[in-house]
Image (cartoon, rainbow, N blue to C red; front, side, top):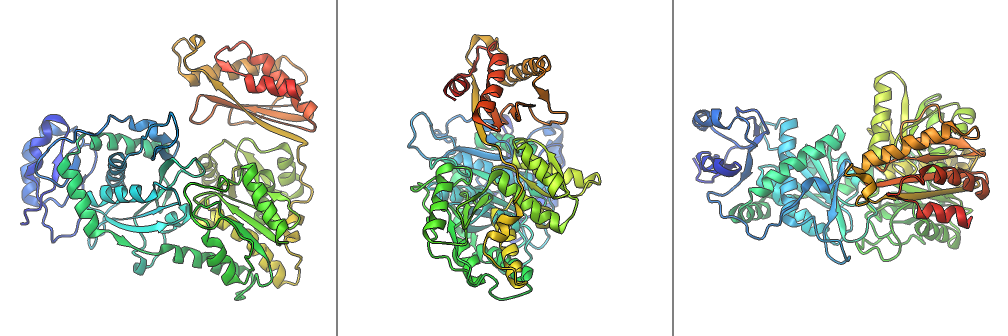
Length: 610
């Protein structure tokens, strides 16, 4: 038996038990359930030690095991107290990773990251069985952020320290990380059992975070809370020896692979197949890409050029975590202005823009018309409904009334307007299919879009491939004409003359809250507004609505809802004219003025200035 020790480090007085367990270093690491009710342990405990453990079982039945690879327990004096649950952002984890912004202290340190990674390892062991011939595998990728490398190293330490195998992909996209859980290719150590993407989407340079995947898809909110609960316990039990040994183990065992080669090859094959297996179906098309200095620069050289497209004029393809040119965000006006200018300046047929980690995208046609938000949803709906007539299109709650009319009256589909949050939209589409209502597309105005045919993964690159498929198949059938093929698909979409989103913040320190949580106060605002609307004959509450309060009137509509995560009530207003939108804004302002903790200054400014 090797003297290489793996401790089961328990909180407080249980730490003495730790040194009783040893692992044979020649045996494969596997996940085994210890005989107690609680979290899973990472270990390779022999039957002798299992017998020894039984002596202590009764006294520790409800303890949560935490692990490190050291035989002593010297405390780590420099670890700050951390509220791990504050790092949760819905189904992601996000925090401040580097200094540089006043008032934003670092919350995502390397030890915090290592604890989160170790917690994911424990969660994954709880959910999956290890192959008897190898340990569970986890792939790790990151976007272009300046904190990416140090966090990748910390994640690797947390995973390898728990006995799992790590494969680093380096610069990658979020969709590629999910794909790595499904690819069957041992040359790339695939499939992996779990995947971690290090990203904070379009947030500023000082932020970073994590998205987690198995082959069942992205983890949900309850899973993230579970992981953070585990991480808090692991973090408290860190020792200098633990951290030192995990660093040594990672340096000796981490593997690396260029998985993006596999992912991009699959995208190329999809377009060729749509065009009848033509090698260069986009030959002659001029398509420019704007990656915003995020992780999406691969799309020009690795996807478009092998298909024959001309990509000259593409911009900001080089990864730069300071994002010096514009925010990599398809909803950002400056970003869309940049790709539009590139299309027009280069007389291109099409422009494509991605967010930082490539799970969102948008396009611009040859005339400079933006294909994002409602237009992108309309375009994708037209493509999907050609393939699946009558299917249900699931969207978020802020889509326009004109989009509903377009999907249902022109395309013959069904529009199911649900909640904000890409995971909410995707999960709702999956639920509808489970109860017998066919749905093939779940898509948000933010640019998150997922298709049933692509395992319900929100993949910005795959959305653009669907557009390329349309261009390629049209060319193959003799119906060329550049991006007009796409523009024609959204002909007849009614668009609002005026649209605005205002964010009404709740002051959590205001005495009017009377100690109540901000969500309770926000619900009271919505209830009062609902009563106000019922008394006004010019306003009509939407008969079916899943989030907040949606109201029609003056030829337009408004939606007031509670933010998913923050003490904010976002207000969306659309109207035929700005004057109609102001009337809707005035109705909201009149109703909510009785809530002094609600900051309505942006709403007041809007109704006064318009």
